Image (cartoon, rainbow, N blue to C red; front, top):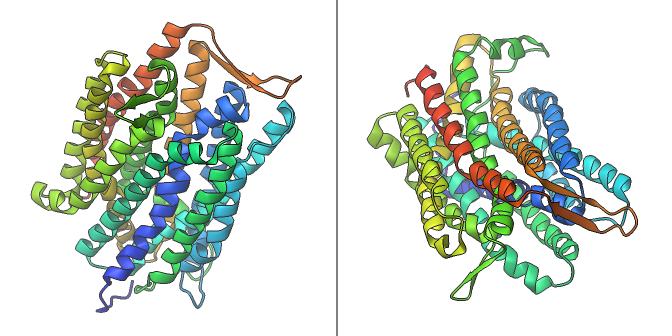
Length: 453
């Protein structure tokens, strides 16, 4: 890529942060935390339908994400290579998200068709915006420290907006009133509008300084080159595991409050529902996402910093399993969530900065830029890990005795627990032991990652 002496500004870093505040802090946060519970307990899908929906969407993403990355790499416009996708994808992202949180007055088959159509459309729009957004990091600067700062701003933006979204969610529901389905529909419009504005601001405030070295014509060679790129292979596996770790915890949080702690916990007037419960982690991630660049310099490399943070997550996740399943221990649970989130906050910015390193490595090895294609694997791993974990949560809950669906006669959602102890134990394990095992796998994979920066 051509180098430049034009330095990034604070305005651009804030603009870049707004992009993940919209995608990560609003749309993806709600999809990761609220959707499994929303689909089974409010929308009226069966557990099997919910699991299948997320699995089908992941197979869809395996194809669309790398294709989007390759398409973005070849885009040439007055707005640049990656920014036009962000600018013109902003409004569709917000509209489809709002429609996905609407519960139509259909029977079981109609609801299934609606959910599958809108969810797949949401994944397509999210891909069209978020793959170019991630790739944008590779063309805004060629300075490694600046890349770390952009990644840090990105994570702070995502976690700050995630904190606001999750903390305000139960209070906004109460303000809207009516049925849960009505509440989610109204919040879908509100949050979808904010996501569209944040995404548009990101596209307008950022700047592409580096010109990708483009291949003269479309070729399958960049796809083949990926599988000869060892840093990409290991980092993509790390990214999938990282999102499995987060995905299990987010997807099961609603069930944990509902079925292990028997509903919202009110402490000194504070309503602790599943979104607020995870908010404590969001604000911690926001703080330590900002600390991540300094922590990385202190440790000596991104790989070591990532490994130490993942190890902290493994230990704290195991500790959560041994907390008594009782609302009076809610602050102990919150404390462990905060400790776990320190690790998440430290390693989250590193993944995207390391993808920028992998993109530079690929350009050196192959002679042409495949930045969009490489960053698309980061987005794919995000969606793959989060949705597969959500599908597994639904599937494992079903196997343990959780049954949901829509009554064909009344159209009402029906939930039945056939084995309460089994369901509770599964929920508790999915929030603690499953993520702990995945965090240890991350540490192992990072030992094999060959770039030492």
